Amino acid sequence: MGVRRWWDERALPRLTHRSCQGADVDRWRAPVCRAATGVVLDVGFGSGPNLEHYPSAVTRVLVAEPSDLAWELSGPRRTAFERPVERTTLDAADLSALADGSVDTVVTAWSLCTVPEVDRALAEALRVLRPGGSLRFVEHSLAPDAGAAGWQRRVQPVWGRVAGGCHVDRDLPATIGAAGFVVELEQARYIAPGPFRAWGWFVSGTARPR
Image 1 (cartoon, rainbow, N blue to C red):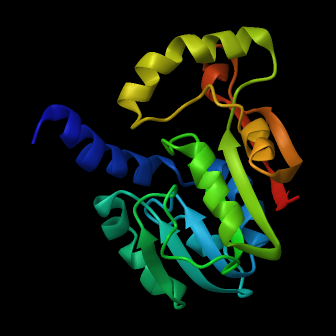
Image 2: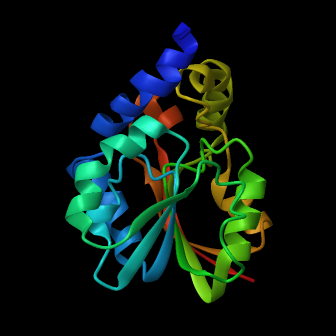
Image 3: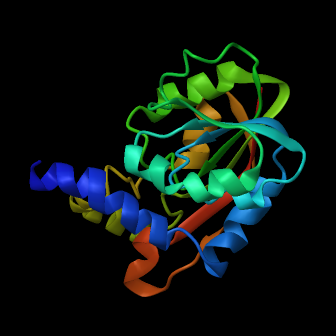
C-alpha cells in the first residue's frame, strides 16, 4: 500500500473519527439531525456520529459511505442505535439501489465538501426524496467575504490532497439550490478567527425540493 492510499484509507478515517465529535461540533450537528424523520439517507456517514442525535421518529438509516474503515469504526454506534442501519452505497453520486421517493430525510454533515461528484449526488438525493421530504445539512462552505474566500481558494490545492478531497471553496448553499432545492439557512457564521477563517465558515439549514 502506497503512502497516499494508506493516508486516505487508514489514517484519515481515524483522524476524522476522533475530530468530528465533541460539544463544539455537536452544537451544529444536533439541530440538523434532530429534525430528521422516517427513513434517513445519511450521506458521508463516516463512523456514525449522527446516530446519537437522531430522534425516535427516525425508523431506519441508509448509509452512503466510501470508507470501509469508517464503517467498521461505526460498529458500536450502530449497535447502540437499536434500529436498522444499512450501508447501501459507497458513492453518494450512485444511489441506484434506492427507488425514487423512498427516503424521508437526507442528512449531510460536513460531507458535501468531499463528495467528488457533488452535483450528481444532489441530483440523486433529489430523486430519492419523497414528496414533502427534506435535505438537512451542516457544512463548511465558501465564505461570503472576498478576503476569506481568497484564502480558501489559495489553500484548496494543498488542502484537498491532504484532506481526502475536501473542498473549503465550494459554495454549498448555492450548489444545493442549483440542484433543484429551495434552501433555508438556519445558521451561517465563522467559527474560527484570523487565518483559520479559511476553514471556519459554517452553514446549516434545510433544503426542500422545488
